[in-house]
Image (tube, rainbow, N blue to C red; front, side, top):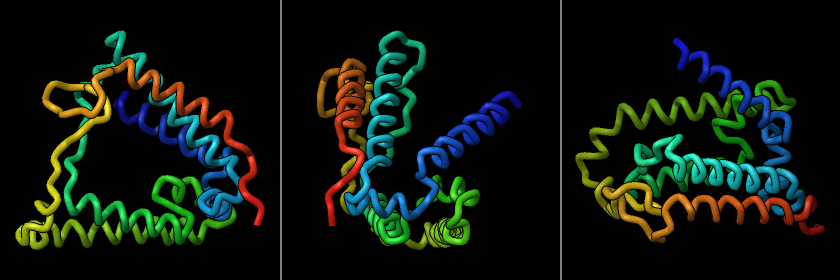
Length: 187
């Protein structure tokens, strides 16, 4: 029960943060993607930096065991899913996370349609998974698991910096988020 209460609290806090920084408004997201207003990008990049820094810090001190992270294998299904998600995100200016927070915003109809579309897509994928998997499409481009930094002996990695790499990456992202201009290019 404690985990459920914590999840509701953290989810509510995340939704409030999305709403507060303007990520629940599709117009703000589309302005960011078009590089017109970069304030939201600053917040996102800085937040990724804080998260990376904290994961690295807690991993170094053993507070949070990072070796249990579930890294998805790269295959054609993940690539196609990412493309579908990216096109939908760029076209509509909403994604599942921002849509839930967006129900409280002015574009609530777009948010509700995005949520319903995501649930419909998940349902269609769930009922068609076996048929698609039997064709071998998910094995195409099967590149396996890969991590940027060493987090587990069972997962290959690109850079052998371990959690120190996460700290460095976090600081780098926070610096980029800090120096990004609040406004983008003029049209």
